[in-house]
Length: 138
Image (cartoon, rainbow, N blue to C red; front, side, top):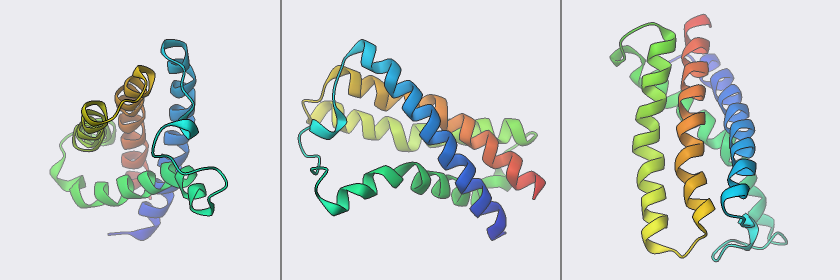
């Protein structure tokens, strides 16, 4: 494993997750408005540990980049195909079960559920392709 690839890939994937996540979250507000910070179970903004909520895109980005380095050789195709497959696989493994669990166990707004499924369906493959390209180039 080459740590430079993991670190650069993690930063880039984190930016992609943040930008796409925010953009799509804005669009889902049209479907069903909700305030993420007012959902049941969320820590208040005055709680110091709540700031960690906002580093999630980079935690996910670094995790994606690290896991990609472990699975890169098992994926077939060029870097774009590998990244696309990896991103879809991560969406299935991470996002779908999480969104399902929240949907069946919590009374959250419909827009939240839509955002929890569709937003990662967009940013996971895009981040996967970016990570794959970085791992190929560095």
